[in-house]
Each structure stands twice: as C-alpha cells, then as structure tokens.
Length: 438
Image 1 (cartoon, one colour):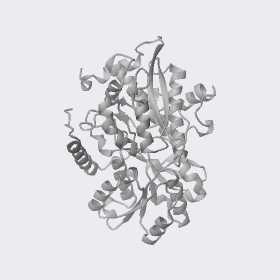
Image 2 (image 1 turned 180 degrees about the horizontal axis):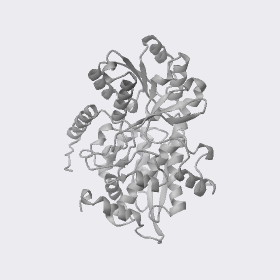
Image 3 (image 1 turned 135 degrees about the horizontal axis):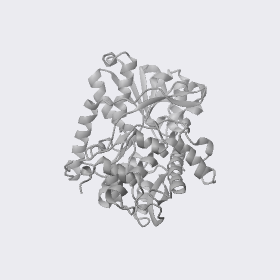
Image 4 (image 1 turned 90 degrees about the vertical axis):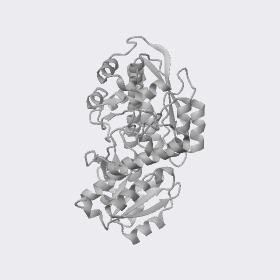
C-alpha cells in the first residue's frame, strides 16, 4: 500500500485505539537522545535533553509507552561535537531489538554528516528546525525531516516582520540589517536567504561572524555601534547569545530591534543581561511556560516519583519545551507508523513512513494535553518542512518571562522555494540521487 493513499480517516481511527490494547509488550521502542550535558553549549543542551526525556519517560509511566509498547530511551553524549555525534550514531543505530527508530542530532554539523548515512541504514533523521534547509524537499531527502520550519523560512519571516515595523516592505530600501552569526554551518545557514532578500528589497546586509564559542565579541559590537544598523539579527547558540545581548546592552542598542533565531531565545540567553535584555525578540514555534496539561502529567508521573531529569522549577522554560515538542512529534510519528503498518514492532523504515504521514492538528494537540502549544503540522512526500511558519516572542525582564507577541507568519516562499529547489538539485547531482515521484 502506498502511504499517501492511506486516508486520514483510517489513520485517525487506528491512532484512537492501541493496536495491542491492554496487552503489555516486552518489545521496546529504541529512541536515542543525542545530548550535550558537557562542554560550552551544555547550558542550552541540558534543558532540551530534559524536556525530550521527561516527555518520553512520562509516556512510559502513564501509558506504558506508545500503544502499550515501552520506550527504550538511550542517551548519548555528543558535547555538541560533530565527531562525537557520528560516534554516537554508530553506537546506537543497531541498539535494542528495534534498532534506532529515529535520530534527533541536535546539531547542524552532525546532521550534515548523518544525512548520507540515514538512507543506507534506513533510519529517519528529525532535525527539527535546523540542519540542511533544503531537506524540506522530500523528493530528494526522503529520510530527513526538518519541520515545523527551516532556517531559510525563519530568515524571510524576520525580513517580513521588519518590513511590517518599517511601515511596508517598500520601506526596507536603504535600510541596513546586520547578521551576527555563529561561524559554523549552523550560523551560516540564513546568509544565502538574506542575500536574496537584500537584493529583492534593497536593504544593505552586514555580515558579522563570531567564532566558537562566542565569548569574544567586543569588536563585533564596536562595529555595530559604528555602522548603526537599523536592525540586528542573530544566529547564535550557547554562551554566544548571552554575550551578544550583554554587549548590545552596553552600547545601548534598542532591544526591540534585535531579533534572535529560535536557538537564541531562551532564558539562559537573556537572564545574564538583566534589565538590559528587556524587549529582546526571537523566533519561536511553540509557547513558553508550563501551564499545559502535558506539563501537569510530567510533574505527576515523573517528578512526583523522583524520576525527573532536571529541576522541577525549570519545567516550561523555552528549551525544555523545545525538547518536549520534539519528543511529542517523534512519538506521534511512531504512533502513526504503527497505524500504517499494523504492528507495534516498528522499524526505522516504518517510522520514516510515520513521519511522512504525520498530521498533528489542533484537535490532536488538545488530546495530547498541548492545546495551542504549537502550530499544527502536516507532512507529505514532497514537503518535509511542514507549515514553515514562525512567530516572534519577546522578553520581559521585569517579569522574567517570554511571551508570544505575534501570530505565525508565512515565509516568503518566492525566495525560499527556488533556494530549496536549487540546493536540493545540486545535492542530488553531487550524490547521484534520483528524485522520487510523489
């Protein structure tokens, strides 16, 4: 049966009833967790890993796993190092009876290295909102999923937001926008998109790389003080973010004109700057806070039992929720795979099919205890990016909390579409990949 021919009604009906209702299974679902609890990026890696693991452990404690099939969560420490990440992959890909069902690399560098391996080993990669942006093209990248949006979509949405604040896209002409970016594959991802947008709308793009790990930025911000850009965008990670926000405060750069990528918008990034961070903006694709039924269940089944991976008080932080939403979509892809293939003993190949048929609408989010927590996602054979929509959140330094301040913007698809097509075609040519028919 072709996956795309399976009706949404049938999948929904199958999802509603566990395949082996009331029957415990010794078979376990192996889900690796690529963590970085050590190294310079640990302050951001830890809350993500906690949210990811707590949600999956909650499913085990509350539901007996996914459809009464327990999850075997296998942490592997990468320290945000590409070489170690590849070693983790090799060590876990055949783990457990099921083998690794999905890999969440949590690093653009690791993702790039694993893309060619995934099709050989038949293990899907879920690079949620990071990694190779052109993996949005499912015809070329059938094993890679980067929903709910890629970096190119986010970059164009920032340009749209700036245009809106300037009174119209036509008013971008003559403006100056600076990009402060982590000097790595991750940080360089939005450059091509912003260059196309600069040409289209007539703004000047100022590129300011920051070397790993990002603690030395005096020269960068002296340049910003001299150049006086109208807006500053940031593609940062770890300590780079908090240093940048402190430096921006020191030169009195207006924070409501400083926008970070969704990996530059956590509590860790803004709290060290104190009051100076007030008004800072970042991209977002889920809500902050712990006021959702799913959080209540994590507290009840995990933290009340003394099995939480982190501190109870940090449940609901941005990066904790980022890990939680990644785990939720992963679990739903596995659940969908079980429905499609009529078995709880799924493989990585089955789970790839589950990702490609994933349809988590608002009704399903409510059932999962996450109403209005994130944007509905529907994946297809052609489109592995999903909706591609991004919202903005803003930091309130006095209240010490993030709040969503916009709705979800559509990306500038006239920019992102041709870029995805060209980049994926180049990858296909270089790697002898034949585009599949969807």
